[in-house]
Image (cartoon, rainbow, N blue to C red):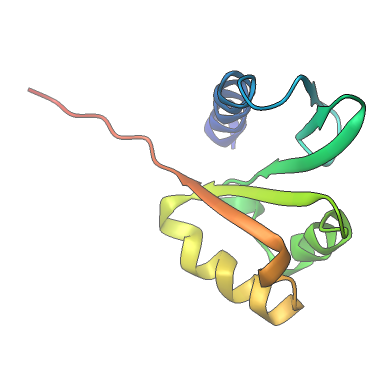
Length: 111
């Protein structure tokens, strides 16, 4: 579980740097959902939720549904190996058309 917490934090830090080019205001919500709020000129345009293998559940999809409000894009960042599972859950909840799904993968190559 500690490793997943570490990975979660690393992905949030990476996304914060990555989105800095597109959004003037990026808020990290360390204590709650969503993980990142992306805004321009005070207008929230997107929210980002970073999930790990163990945090992807049908119950969590209820929170995703709450975050996927009209006018605000929800971006889910999930492990590459869990993308199909997440898409199935999104279709079951009826929000697949309102959610963007990105993936991450940590690769270590040895000589």
